[in-house]
Image (cartoon, rainbow, N blue to C red; front, side):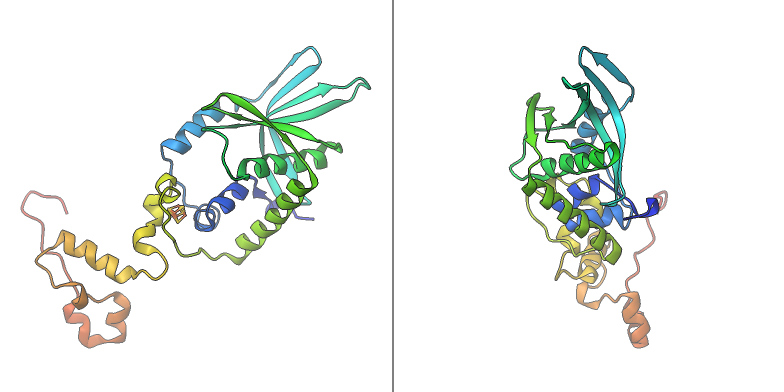
Length: 249
Ligand code: SF4
């Protein structure tokens, strides 16, 4: 059992599946940036994040329901949970998660919804067999069955997430066209310049060369570490010329 302090957000499961570096940047280094895709998703969620509930016939709909599982170490929020009254009088939960875009080829969204279900089952002491994903682009509900395979995959991912965050190591960036271009952290991650096997020193040198084209080429640029290790190289460290009069540095 996890303590309240050790709980991790359900959304981190999706980040971990999308890209381990993205997960580390957000949940270990606390970096966050919004792009048009995350903004669209936020607007879609804002429509159901107002909280509250309503009842129509035998369906009681609860919005923005807080979730927690001490067994899996998760916390989060369900966009919508419909409680459907059964013939025996029991109100059976049926969670609905709102997503921007359209159904994905992988099962990231299903895993996230299943994590919500595992929380709900622990909190309410019930068994939930089905829920749904609603996609903003297609405006279509996709039913999801919480079978043993999906549950096992979700629980294994929860364990991996805790081990990953506990390790506290941010993996090197590996640029993948399509994936990185859609990532809101592209500007903070710099996968083209800071990826595995890429030299941060050469990247820094290129940036300086672009700003100061009259300065020595990359090979003559030293880093602070170089300068400490080899004092004789300090003189070749690059300095930008002062900006023209009237221009703020
Ligand atoms: S830009 Fe690419 S490598 Fe960097 S966090 Fe995003 S998906 Fe991962």
